[in-house]
Image (cartoon, rainbow, N blue to C red; front, side):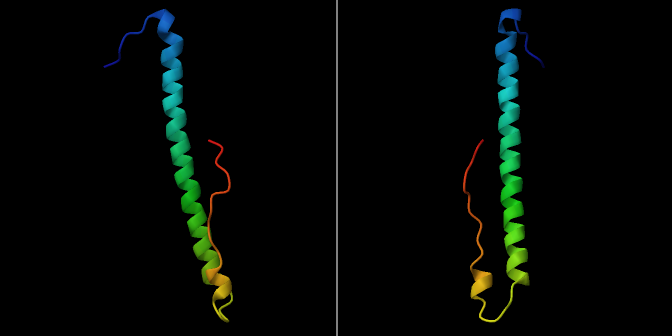
Length: 68
């Protein structure tokens, strides 16, 4: 059930809701990017030349910068 909010507390409640949404969206985006990076790495490794295998093994995924 929804809780009652006085008009002077409305801005704080809206900001709380927006912060929660931003956290959820950020976590979902981080998860999707991590999954996509792993998928691309596997695809590159499987399509790389197989002479010695060193080139294929050299591919990795790393986080360079996190902005959110």
